[in-house]
Image (cartoon, rainbow, N blue to C red; front, side, top):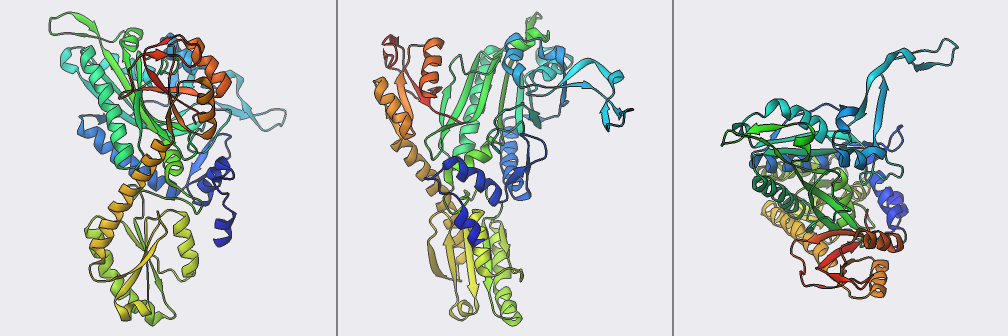
Length: 493
């Protein structure tokens, strides 16, 4: 393990390589036999499960219910909303046949040409079309509204360049799809969900985010408006961590979903959709981790505390265990997830390195000498600081320490973002700050042409119009034309 840690590329040398190595060495995921797809390993999936469980409770607290919709979507469904199909056409995986057979010429198994589907099916890149095709059967009256549905699922978007968690052809996510009777209710729900995502990112992931609205060029295909949360990674690049879309009546019109309103008149339903994915795993890694491995915020760590005994013989281990067992019971009673690693097939030094690599927030080491002095060694993963503390009252101390780690990680990430966010008024400074790795607030003339030219020259995109941004008019840094407000630019994942 010590050798593996030594071999972990430093962030300052190659940030991308450091990330890719860490995902594998920390046992989060690995490449699969299918190009562009990954296997999420138990430790990585345990983190995702904690994210999923927390978000699921937050959704349900707002009245949302879970359901499940088919993986396969008729191609004709996807074609009903023009902007939507154009936005996803290049990423679609298409099912054309339903049977294989042995090749009569002895070349193995081939697709049976006689088993071609009457209508080709799309492996879902997102589920708006199949869901609104279903909602037509569920919604008839204003009494059926609002309809607040979420599904946890996998989706497929055929990616050419992939990176585990950040961009894979298949990924896990949740997608909420809500139907409302009025435009006002619909907009309120779209805003409510982006605020919920921001709360989750900051409270549980310890990751500060900028809430904003996407430019027309960057919004979701088929949406009237897209809200986003944007987070800064340690290299200064932005990562879109969650989105919420006001879809207006576009999908209701495409699938003829109407309801009888309170005035007994037919009206098209108003729609929104919102989602986060396993990209959050990538965000978590890149926001907090260091050259020694993962650094996990306690609120999402599968193991918050690990206890490692240091002993020479079975009698010493037995004595240590007699002290550890009631401590574990006390910690679990306080809601702390704790592991006692008394396995005899690995030395303590190996265990220390392993749990450091995996980002366990607090490590306790206790040996025979500690039993004599009534003490224990505690190490914080975020600072790597060690201290010797009395065993008496240690459970309460650990609870306070975990909360301090959570808050410290958030503050560290917030301070980093504030240090690397700049207000600029010239194109030269704009390019310089981007090269340094930064968020840049600058004026833009509002045209897609300028947006595309800036992207082509600098690889930076408009991440959003920050909801709490500077609304003072100014002059576009690129064209010199009038600008309504500053927007947030950054290079992104």
